[in-house]
Image 1 (cartoon, one colour):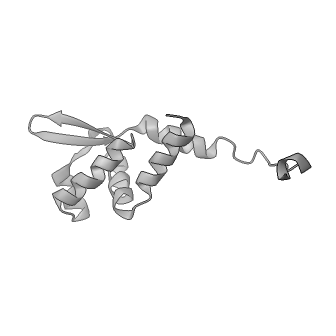
Image 2: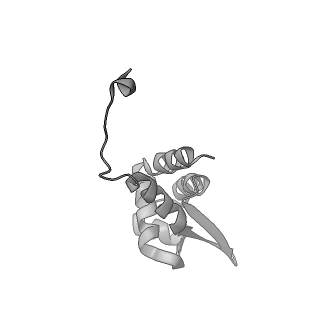
Image 3: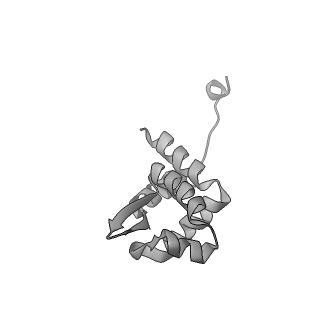
Length: 104
């Protein structure tokens, strides 16, 4: 998948208020992560709702899941987060020049 496509997928996944809330909570949790029950307690959401939204965050490559016994721990993939933010800020303040050829 190209960088543009993977960043677009990441941003699309974060473009929903529930997924954004889950993601920000997992960012705060750090490398320890949280299981679905813990996420549900923090955000006052049903496990079925969380499972759906977590699945989309996993599919977008933003969250990784690891089985620990009978529980599944959800963690932010911080490398993926850095790649997304880096892509958005890579050309910050570089300037843009529009030539006649560009406008055509």
